[in-house]
Length: 485
Image (cartoon, rainbow, N blue to C red; front, side, top):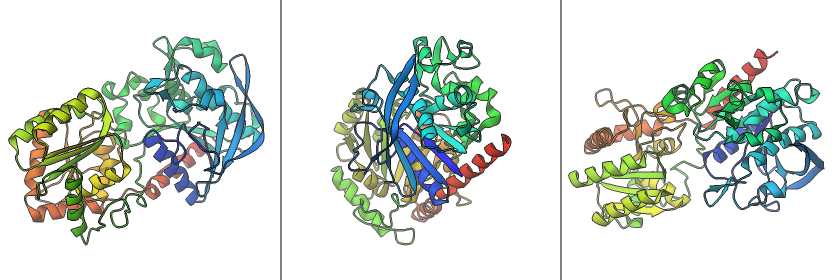
């Protein structure tokens, strides 16, 4: 199958979050399965053309926008094995330090930047004579491609057999802009209505993609159901319900080449399900790094953005309670985010310096050590479209304690002491009382060595690789093609 994969970021070229990992892993897995994959993204300033051996190809690209055209260049690399990667270069739009913002402040012309990118990708496909059967778009930055295919390119022979799929990684980010951007789209005024792209007197890029894409996916089955509810749909729940016949959920996979305790080069001691001694050594290394007392107290780890979505405010309230009630527990965190939450953790750490460790920022090596050295990993998210850390934790025999939402609910099965089944601990209502209760239960299980050993085995047996996920995408691509023949 001929697939064009359009994204605003992809590892190793440009990354701000999980979208970049997804946009690397899925195209690579598709190529490995024998598909022809064309990956498109902007040529941001941070993407080194020399490091990635990029070559300028084709002719200057005329991209329509607003009342005229603006010219772009197309660069190509085969840096990712099996994947044809193209960059749309336009210095005015993408020659900046940030991808979407400057020190947390969104660029004022983000609407124009990504309208241009969407049109540029379609024009590049025409110029390069690439006729994809599937164009796979991701999030609001590329959602307009589904609209443009149906409006501007409906009679273009290059796209006669092309169908579009939009993956929504987080519905909390929708690309909402004022009506003044309408002229940039070059679409009929009649499309500015509540059934199409209008959204509370604004233009909603993600909504346009939902309406016009041939298929919509989210990154877990549970999240596909949740976004049809008012609590999770961010004012788009009714639109999702209206298009539920083309809405599917596919849980993300894990790159086990990168997250594997048997051969992980970023942890000090390797280990496996059959030989766990290295895990206890990693725990001591983790305690040493954070200057915690070296003992066999259970260590609860957390790697997260400190934001409302991640429920970190609920976590810190729970820890306030837990650490005064429970003497035999330690906690470590790696992350960045809202300063008031950082201040709360620092205050708690000052009270329990030998039991609580903090590190602000991001550190890839430390992230691997936390996964390997912790006994439990806590994720109190208010919503979590897919989540990966809970699956990393399972691979490392670190037991997840999660809110039963989105991909967390799809991947974690509640441990049953009698049946000896399950791979973690879940709670439903996201409040400090329930989180406190489930943590105390997990700590009780920890004291039973035989039961804890069985729980670790259950966790490490779990596998959800991109080889699993890619088969579900293949089936969906095939069905999209058939339904439109």
